[in-house]
Structure formats: structure tokens, C-alpha cells
Figure 1 (cartoon, protein in one colour):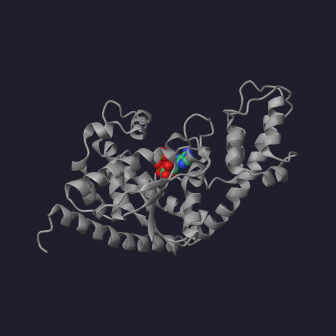
Figure 2 (cartoon, helix red, strand yellow; figure 1 turned 90 degrees about the vertical axis):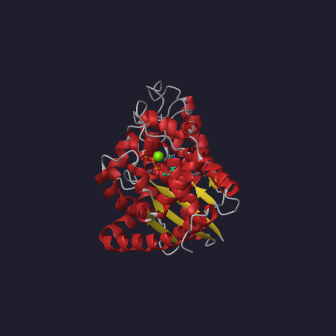
Figure 3 (tube, helix red, strand yellow; figure 1 turned 180 degrees about the vertical axis):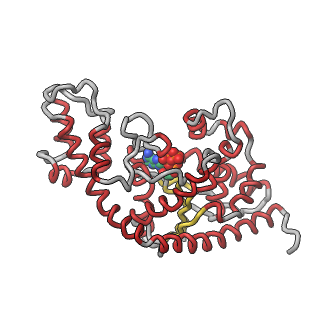
Length: 345
Ligand code: ATP
Ligand code: MG
């Protein structure tokens, strides 16, 4: 049986980028019933750039758990666990640190970009720079083969596989397992842009539609989306490329939904009309709003149930964490054996 591991940082509520980039894949995989699945709430990793705001991290642990359960992650099939409660992961990180150089860490393009975004250029917390090493510990502790993620995570998996190779070679034992990313098929879903169309949708950038947003919030956010700045009058020809509304329609709609919520038979037909001129931004935004509501309504329903049964959610986290700890502890034992630092056995 193959093993799957993914996770999210509890730095805020989860958003549509998480949904199409990773959560949807997780639910589909869980329902295939042929994987061991672990989903981690990465609170320790979230502290690497939120060490001065632990309250935010702590509060969002439950929010992220609620988001998981509301999109349909099934705790009977998936172990949902809290990273900091599995201290074996920290220990593994310590041994892996020896297998990676500073310059290698500094070359990681995702981390480089995040350092800029967070204003860490002048002084980078060591914990932040080394979070790809801790991610390697997360992945390898469970001997995960498949990681369903957005494409910002590709450099992390590359780094993890390098550490795996080094470890197995240096300690001369095939203890650790290499993993591969499972990206969503649709390229836009691998990195859903934010409302402004600039960066990817990201909790830290405040450019998100959250899975827990109410209808009114979603409506306002869709109405504020970046379209084509030269499309001023309805009859002006409009650009589809770079137009966030059409990007989202590419990801979330199908012809059936387009027929249901517009006067067009297909997204293609709608795009052609917009390009010619004669189709207003408010009209296309209303179509998108209705389609997003179809995605979000059942998620909100489920969320309500778990919000009213928050003790159940805590119980789920506790059980998942106990299971995760058993597995991680086994791997740590094998790692120490391979290095030869298992003194009392
Ligand atoms: P933060 O700003 O705190 O880093 P984030 O919004 O980037 O938050 P993460 O918790 O870092 O979210 O990412 C969790 C998972 O969701 C990762 O697998 C990541 O690839 C995926 N993901 C995040 N944002 C997007 C997006 N806009 N499009 C597709 N996938 C995404
Ligand atoms: Mg991120």
C-alpha cells in the first residue's frame, strides 16, 4: 500500500487555492481506498515565520481541522494530526540538517520568494530557512510516496529526495523512501492566482476567497476581481488572458454549469463574446459567483455540523496524532539504528 502525506500551515482559514491545489485531490485519493493517508497541521512550521504570534497559530489549528472535515476529508480513512505533538519529527530534522548545506537552502526558489514577501532579506530566522529540512522529516517519517500539493511545493520535494539519497548512501542502508508530487491536472489549479491576479492565492497575502466565507463575502470578492482594465464600456472588446474571472471559470466551471448560470452553451462561447465586445464584467462575475456558490454551499453545510460538535473535532485530532506518533517513532528508531546511535539496545 502506498502512503500519502500532505499538510497545511495553520496561519489562517483555508481558501479556494488549497481546495483546487490539494484538498480536492486528497478527497479523491482517500475515496480510492488504496492508500495510507496522513494529513498534517503544520503548526511547528507555521511558527518559523510566526514565532512572535503563537496565538494566531494555535487558534488556526482548529480552523484548519474544520476546513479539512468540511471539504470531506474522512477521519475514518485519513489520520489528521498536529505536527508539534509528534516530537520525533523534530529529532529527525536535527539529523537531516547535517545532510544539507546553507547554499543549497538559499537556492530554494519558493523560500527565496517567501523571504522577500516577509521582509526577511536582512535577517532570516534560521528556523525559516531550514523549514524544507523539517518538511523532509515530515515526509520521510511516514515513508510517504505521494504528496498531493500545489506547484510551490516542488522545490521542497526535490530537497527531500536529495536528503533521502544522501542519508541512504552515507549510512549505507535503504531506510528512507523517495516521494513524488501529485499535482492537479489543470495547470491553473496548481497555482490558483489571488483576486488581484498577481501572486498565487495565499493566506499571507490577503487575496483569498476562503472556504468559510459567507455568500455575501464571496459576492463582494468576486465583484472586486481584476478583469481587463481596458474593458471600460460593455461594447468594448475584452481580454480573456490575464482576466482573473476567466481564469477561475477555467478552473471551476464546466459547460453544464455555464448553461445553468448564463445565456451561453459553453465557456468557449462566453469567451468569444467577451473578446468581441458586448459582454459586461458584472455579467461574467455573476456567473462565476453562482458557480463558486455551488462549490462552497455543501462545504459550509458540513462545517456547520462540525462547528456545533467541536469536541468531536478535537477527538479526531487526538486519535490521528496518536497514530502518527507510532509511525514516526518507528522511522526514528530505524534512522538512529542506521546512523549507529542506538546505544541501549
Ligand atoms: P501561507 O501564506 O501561510 O504560506 P498558503 O496559502 O501558502 O499559506 P500553505 O499552508 O503554505 O498555504 O499551503 C498548503 C498547501 O496548499 C500546499 O500544498 C500548497 O501547494 C497548496 N496551495 C497553497 N496555495 C495555493 C494556490 N494558490 N493554488 C494551488 N495550491 C495552493
Ligand atoms: Mg505557503
